[in-house]
Amino acid sequence: MRFACLVAVTSILFAQAAVAQVTDPDMNCADYLKLAASAGPTPKTGDAAMDKMAADIDGKMNAYCKANPKAKAMEAAEKAMGG
Image (tube, rainbow, N blue to C red):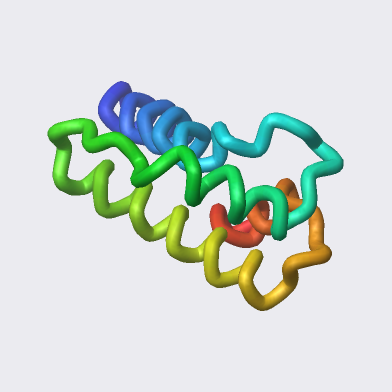
């Protein structure tokens, strides 16, 4: 049970790191893509599974935002995390 809670909390923290660039709830995807490009890649954690998850979320957000540049970046984050 403790391990499952630890995994859940860790997953949430790294998922939040992937969308931490969404600083404004009204930010659209076009602005998010510009910000993400200037910020560079998601920092590595040293944990291969967490790094893969963060890269997957980044990829999903980027794909959604490229397809829907006028959508809200928070909406892209929700979609990327399965919401």
